[in-house]
Length: 289
Image (cartoon, rainbow, N blue to C red; front, side, top):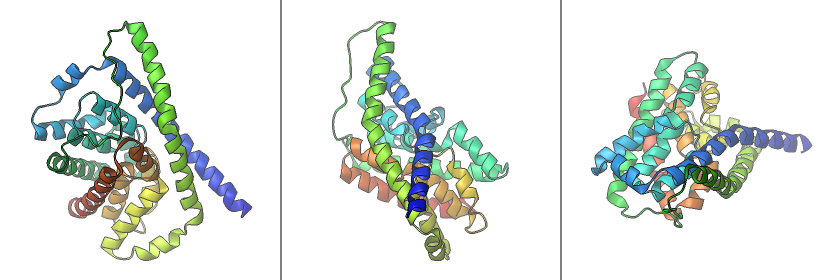
């Protein structure tokens, strides 16, 4: 029992060490958005056309090197500045996957294989776009739990800089507790759950996808490091199941589910989970050889 607790402690700390730098980056970017980006800027940047807004937001994710935890506060702040739900969610989904850091780690993890990088990116982009389009029809409100205060007073650069730091600190303590709870649950799963059971379940093509997506959710790996874990399953599962693991995990895992639940309505998060699970399953089967 003591060895299990020691293993749990080690995994818990490693998850926090992996995620914290990206969470800090995320809350700092969130603070910058709060203080330096105005609603007028966002109104000009986001196309009025819903389809154009979904596509633009999906590809803008590549500019934000944030993990699945750090992207949640950034997304919430963008929505407070006027970015519609159907554009914010695709941005939140692709940011942790198609940014340069994650793509390079994927390239290295799979033995300098660009094919996996392309497959991971293409499936993530298609899933994000499809879900964004679904949201344009189904939800007419932002689905957030509470409003975020948007400061409209004019400030000097120094005041904005101080405000950025203050907002970053507040945001960190707001989302940090959910990261800790999620990391503890994920560490417990990794410690006490026998992976052999999952391997036995994943003997069929379709069941292998379910197993790998479930594993991605439970392990709650940082998107910049999950490719190395995914690569270790190459001798066990087909490429499409591994790509499903690499796409679904950064979109939904234990950590960011709790963080999303702190920001969005539970019903919306549940529906989004179902849409995402189905979309990743279908498009990983269709787009990966």
